[in-house]
Image 1: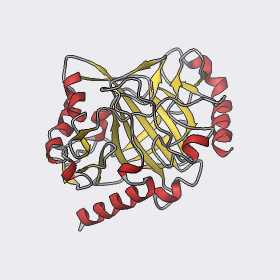
Image 2 (image 1 turned 135 degrees about the vertical axis):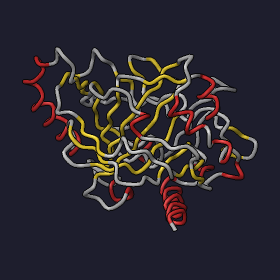
Image 3 (image 1 turned 90 degrees about the vertical axis):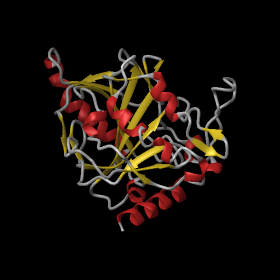
Image 4 (image 1 turned 90 degrees about the horizontal axis):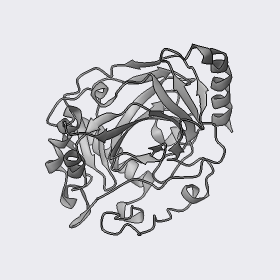
Length: 299
């Protein structure tokens, strides 16, 4: 019964985003000059699109209340994973995983986790080999479709991964089930992840992060997202990243990369939030910047 509900949810998500052949990514591994395609609608016309390049020097500096996580440390032994033709997506959490605090005005619950190889956001013009998106829905809205209609509907916690010679164990737990969904014949057919995984294992230190108002990075590109992009990164090997590049989106066609090109910042407020020692001098800006973010979200 739970698997049936998950399949229906995946079908609804596919309908909301369009079929896999309706939009996609250039194969930059085989042709570095291939242009990024236009996806139409808000994706091309919006003014608060994501991802963007994040600069530590150009960002406003702020001190927010700590982010508070609930159930992220819980071992998930029955997660579902699916190849949706655009990424690998995880869902089916045992209990609600909730996020609050920081600059957030509401409590948010994790809906799904997916990955981009290479990273979508860049920090100080550096693109990382992997970016994990932990997608949250504002609990005041009953589903993602409704949440995407409101500026405060969605929060995405983004984790960037740097190159290392040491394999990442959490990523390895996901890769261990990739063979079950890699082929085009298995696309949109969810499987149960073999290894248990705590979402905490995917997240490094959260005391410093970029905060800005943006959009989904896939169609419909709804401008309903509060982004939390962590500055601390996790290690991953290139061999591990290459495992994701073996995912098929069409028969015998592999998804070598699935990141969206950088979008214009358009004078949005980007706040570099710090809770580390030495940030006390930023206290006077905290309330002002929280208000600024709230106003930005409502515009």
